[in-house]
Amino acid sequence: MIKKWLNKISKGVDAKEVTTSFWDAYQRMGYAQRNNALLGILQEQFSNQKYLIYGWSIQRLYSRYAEDFLPGNAPLRILELGPGDNLMTTALWMLNKRVEHLTLMDMFKGAFVESPSYHQPMLELVKIIHHLNRDNFNNDYPFDTLSTDRLEQAIQVADGKIHLNSDYIDFVITRDFTTFPLPNEQFNYIYSHATLEHYLDPASSIQEMSRVLEPGGLMVHQIDIRDHRHFAKDPFRYLEQRPRDWNFGDLCFPVNQWRACQFAQAFEAAGFEILEQVKVRREPEKLHGIRLAPEFATMPTDDVAITGIVFVLRKN
Image (cartoon, rainbow, N blue to C red; front, side, top):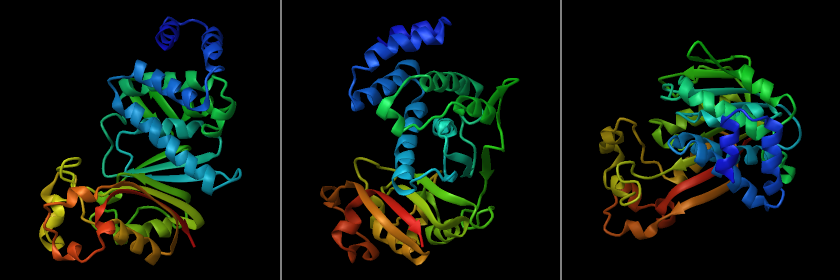
């Protein structure tokens, strides 16, 4: 059904006809089925562009935290740290009627950020999804009638180039995450996804997050606390080296050795209240055979065994 629907779109059939035919099946779906159906559309159309699927799931996660912990209609001024190639996330934020401005900050622009071949079909797909009726699905994607126009203004494809409109989106390049080139208290929501484990000095970076976040603002971080040379098979091997000898693994993308308890302490020291800690991975069985360096051997096993965690925080 999805393939047939997409084939109609690609042939320029009237959007009303397309959405009507899709809606017949969509109405009969449960909540989870509806989300899976839209993900299926992405996979059907963009099976070779994993970042579209990845960005979709990231945006769902962090938009849900915004709705849960920043209720009401206050405009969102968002800072995303380390967006990489996830511009699908950016596009979906532009459709959210609460988002006033989005700032992306990273050391570089990912390969897809300025790629028209990536953006053009992505923008077309997002516009089509926008036209679907959603019922309860709209709780995750609170679009309004002007959101498609705003998306087109925010991310433009012209003359074979991508243009980000600074009225809606800023992309800030920095080489030093211990000093953000941003004003005080500019944002009310900061988030990152698999980013903080790459910071060479997380404590200083967290202090900067506190500086640029307004009082009462929300911050959410998903942190991948694994040896990035051996993600699945050997996630603790790097803890055999003492921090003074680790040198961030001499990797292209350096990774620190911080454990969840160290991040928690740094957040609290910077004036954040921890609202939730969601342990998304805990793998004590993979500690067998690992000779932990003294700094980690003295930690509680549970603190060491966590390899993925989400922190939800509020600035006091």
